[in-house]
Length: 289
Image (tube, rainbow, N blue to C red; front, side, top):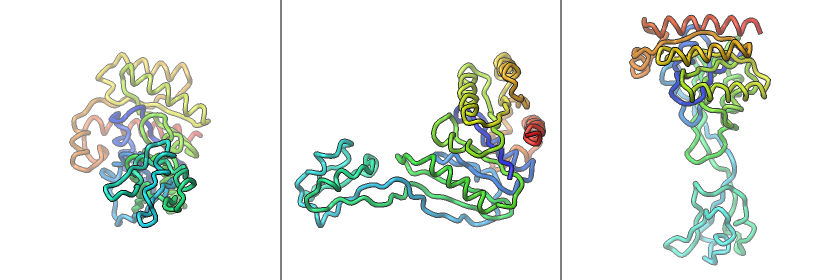
C-alpha cells in the first residue's frame, strides 16, 4: 500500500479539502484522518457503512475509592500536580484533567484508597465500507495523540490490507500527532498558505520531514491572495529540489461544498480544476518513488 499524507502548517489552509478531493479523484479505497484533536474528513468523504466505535486507552489515571478514604490528605499533599481535592463529604477525589498518572498517591496512602486504572483517552472509529475510513477523536486534556494517530493508521492498514493506495489527512503543525502521521508514509504533500507565517510553517514541516527521512511535495492554496508569496514558495521549492505540484485559487465554492458535506471534487469550479492538476502532479511524483 502506497500512503500519501497531506499536512499543513496550521489549521484552515485547505488540508482536509485537498485530502477529500484526492480520495474522490483517485477512487482510493482506504483513507485515514489523523487529526485526532479535530477530525472532520468523515464529513466530506462518503461512507457507506455504520461506524464501528471502540475505546482507546492511553496513560493510566488515579481514582480514589471513597469507601476506603479516611480524609487524611496524604495523597493531596504528595501530589505535585495539585490533582487531588477534598470533597464536601470530607474524603478526597482526583481531578480528571489534572491527573498525570504518576502513582504517588497510591504509594503514600495508608489505606490503599487510590489506585491507577486504564483511562479511555479517546474513541477509535472505523467505517468498513467500499472505502475504508479510519478516524478517531481524542478526549479533551489527554496527552496520547501520537499513540492514537498510530492506532488510526494501523486500523486502516489492517482493514484495507489489499488496497494499493491510501490518502491520509494529518494534523496541522509539527507536533507529536504529525510525527506519528509521517512515520511509514511514502510521500507528504504540504498545503501551504501564501503568507509570511505560511512560509515559516512550510519551512518547519519540511525540516521535520527531512529529519524523518520522508519525501515531500508542496502546493499553495489560495495563491491569488498573495501572488508574491506564492512565488516565494515556488522559488523555495526550486532551491531545495522539492517538487512543486501546483497552485489553487481562492474559491468560495470550496466553503460551500464543505458546508454541504461534499468534496470540491464533486462540483464544477476553479478550485476543482486546480486541485485535479495538483492531484495528477502529486501522483506523478508518488509513482516515481
